[in-house]
Image 1 (cartoon, rainbow, N blue to C red):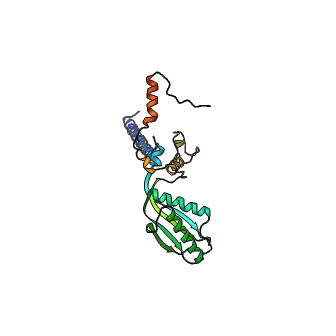
Image 2 (tube, helix red, strand yellow):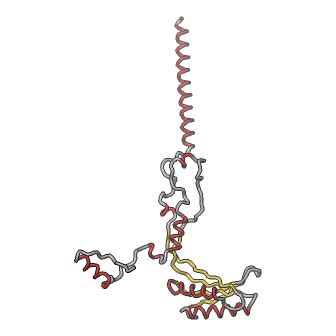
Length: 238
């Protein structure tokens, strides 16, 4: 081959090599760009794994409400028991006055009789008239039975999040989420809500109660039985 032909072939080979390198570099950049567009999740779903952190119980001042329907004859036995129980709850843990909202219009005679019966029941249950804050309101729908609304604010335990939310599918539509086998968002919310509703004293969720005094009369025989190498168990007659 002539020297000129060999030089031309060498230049063509070098140019082909440079083009191949540029093509490889472009392909690599495109691949990296595609990876940057994808969000690769590793580890948790982004919310707390512990249900007590997802659905925390908090203490807050919330209203307690009781609607006493106006029936025109005062209070029936069931309503009287409801008002008495409401008054007991007010005495135990209320904050502020007991508000009484009286509807305007409609059966004015029945409303007055029901209000008088409510005030009398509250007084008999230990809530004097000086603790009441009475106001009026206009019902939005005249076809709906009017009610005298009793309310007060008290310390209550409430779940801070809403139950029934499903931000992720529990099925296999998202393999990245399904393969981790983690708790779903709504898990534990209903149980936390039940615990908050059933606790006798909301402060029990914050700290334990102080230890009371011991029963000396009940403890002394047990200690003496142990000292005598006898069983301290209680025996019951058939």
